[in-house]
Structures are given as C-alpha cells and as structure tokens.
Length: 53
Image (cartoon, rainbow, N blue to C red):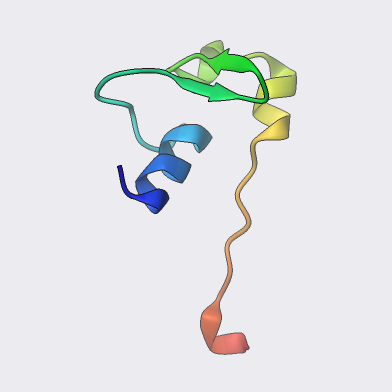
C-alpha cells in the first residue's frame, strides 16, 4: 500500500479493501462514523501547498 493511500484510509477518506488499521494500539473502525469521537479527533490531516515554500 502506498503511503498516501494508507494515510487516506487512516483518515477515513478511502475505504480499506482488506485488513484492519491499528492506530495507537486500537483498531480503527472502517467506517469513520462508527469511530469514537476521540479517535476521530486524534486523526487529522494537514494539507500543505508546496508552492508556498
């Protein structure tokens, strides 16, 4: 699995085709809506614009 694909799956933007995701010792539910509030809060994306560097 490519790194950006893995990050999208962790953030819930892309479904996993198989397996499970473990984050900080806990298994993340495949459906973001079924994850606990703290799990959703702990996983966030930071978008960067490389042209600003």
